[in-house]
Length: 452
Image 1 (spheres, rainbow, N blue to C red):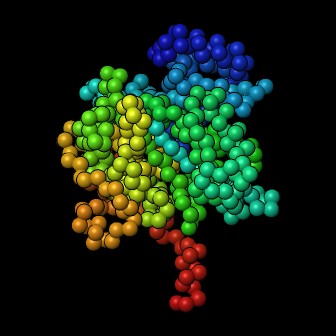
Image 2: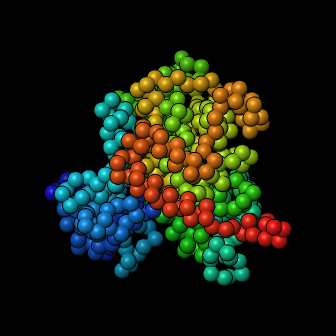
């Protein structure tokens, strides 16, 4: 098969030897977005790079049935990294893999392959997608030294936005996470406490979309692992605590062509090209369906409510953080930084599917030259329903079920997911939705038990 070029294969094998690596983690991702891994001894590294590594795909969520379970993992040499917290006999390196079928074809149910397919379609028109995701997360600690469970967990600290070390007890945690991320190839730009108690954000550099999606998975694994090593728990749940801000995953994005950012037009009052306007219009016109991919769990819709800095109104603006899409300001003379910031995704999403779906929506806007509505620059949370209707401003779905219904009627986003992923994602979400809607919550018991 010869998947890895000989020089790349030699580079990786030599580096593993130089770092006295003993094990190789072959990582991939399932349809819901959970990172999966199988481990091989370093002696099999050359074989894995040359021929891939067989595995049983029948037990992976959203993959295949028992009758077609033989699949294999093909490592991507660009993702090779020594895992910094391993040492001695357990020194480990990792490779992120693509999933192939038994007949040596890329697997349609592999989320990484879905993103590759959409990037290839854009490339046929000369475009490359760059993304800069900003993932927020919460840190929890155990109360009274009890085992850390949802019942015993409490937020790690009571600090607020951009607090100093005298109030921010999480700074030592971030100072361990940042070097680990950098050791695994990410370029960290900023780390700080977020608005809510226990909430953190560590931002990494803008990159090509596939690399950026890989970095998201690395980021999540590093954050969780370092937190666990300090007897803490890191959660990327969108809304783990009622009454305070939830965690988002704002995605900055732009299209490039011929080495130039084609979103930029310094002669435009917004600094945007016509293609950028069309792309943003595509995102807005497919926003309800996109939500099923970018906000894929029941809990996502506890975050998407007015009043907690999460966008719910399908609108855009220059610096409007109440709108779905905003246009960040850039320094004069730096058109390469021109981008749109899509603010509604959250970190529970599968990044490969989310990027693929948003790219498809944006490219549909370009292809159809979709008209972009007027920018909204005032606080949309303060508008009445009548005022929103007068401006033709719609809202995101209010529940996972509404998002699923929107996706079911959106051929562009469904096609981007593909004939394998779409039904598998829907089946998984339907199970969650049915379990949620038939459960009886503590709130319901406390509200109704004694009065009805």
